[in-house]
Length: 184
Image 1 (cartoon, rainbow, N blue to C red):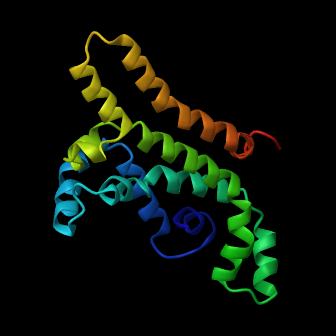
Image 2 (cartoon, helix red, strand yellow; image 1 turned 180 degrees about the horizontal axis):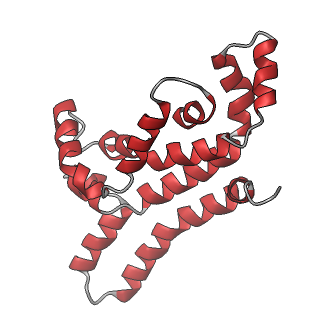
């Protein structure tokens, strides 16, 4: 939604706020881990799935990607909806959101892959071994069963399988989102 607002809505400070967000992209994620962990601790989300999932749900890259995609949406279509009496929320929900489906699916795949393969954040947030994610579990398995290569390969296959299934299921939308800007 923020990407659409930066692309199509006029408000004061829009360009400066967007430039500040882009500047945040150059800051490594590890820099924010300690303050984010302390915030989660105050909210009681340490050692919960919510503490692992919530911080990764919105990011500057997603805002940037949606903004770039939304800039390609025809202004005439949005203006026609405004002339027909539709408000900004109605325009967003009924016109813009369906048109953003390819980029949203692409972001969902990127987000899932990033969080599925994330090792450091779940290691920091989850202290209970029963809640560990697969990458953390495979790493602890490698420490316990160093010589058991078959077990390690089985763990790697189990880690990759859901990602492969997700990609096959969403391949049409994913490729449509990636290729949308290349065809005129």
